[in-house]
Image (cartoon, rainbow, N blue to C red):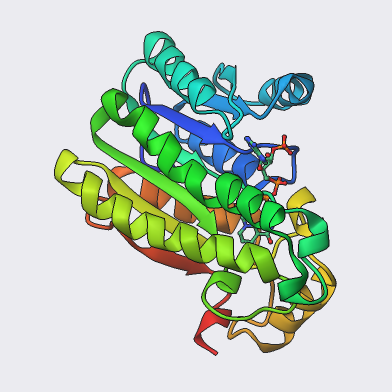
Amino acid sequence: MSIYPTLTNKTYVVMGIANKRSIAWGIAKTLDAAGAKLVLTYAGERFKSGLESLAADLNGEALLLECDVTNDEAIDTTFRAIHEQAGPIQGIAHSIAFADKEALRGEFSEMTRGQFAQALDISAYSLTAVVKAAKPYFAEDASVITLTYLGGERVVPNYNLMGVAKAALDSSVKYLANEYGPHGVRVNAISAGPIRTLSAKGVGDFNSILSELEQKAPLRRNVSVEEVASTGLFLLSSMGSGVTGEVIHVDSGYHIL
Ligand code: NDP
């Protein structure tokens, strides 16, 4: 018997699959295994074929739609199309971030106004933009998750500008949870431990972050994408029905140190 809750005929939108290492891909596979009807969004035309190849491995047939989160019109169009083609939205996994990698190393204050605005736009504001666009289309008891990191709560070497973006994202989760709770929509974040992905490559000396956690975290090991994804499933399904405005750390307990 499967330990997964059944999500058959429920529509989930997963945003932020760059490749097979992406946390969003782990979440998509887990939701697929639970029977969900998936909508996968990608940032631009050039990412489409890679995502099509990945999606071919899923049990169910996923709907693939373009959505650049820096463009409000594109977000609105995407969510209207999702509703038309896949019905009410049961959940959204927002797994999107970007910062110029020059601002993810060296002195924090060396970043520019432009780098700051872009990182906050894509990595923090986009959550609110997406939730706002999805508002008319949410199912009665919908759930939204985003991916955050400890560097938004305290200083982590080189995380710099992305730390500020994650702080804004964490705060957005609370304000959105408070606003959307009366409409039956839960909003939570997962604070994942470091995982080797395309985005992680941009963070200066990322290997040191991985080895520090391995040496010091209570579980003395790094976490897997699957562990993050199963917490995602919990929050996105009825199993997490009483949880909102929360940041759950899936980081081998490193954050308690
Ligand atoms: P990935 O690089 O695999 O995923 C990041 C995604 O963000 C990509 O799919 C990227 O799309 C997308 N993205 C960037 N800009 C845009 C845009 N304008 N519109 C739409 N999508 C965009 O890395 P991860 O899986 O690691 O990152 C997912 C989330 O997890 C991020 O929020 C990250 O900060 C967070 N996180 C990661 C940790 C880690 O150690 N890996 C730890 C804790 C949190 P594309 O590449 O196609 O542009």
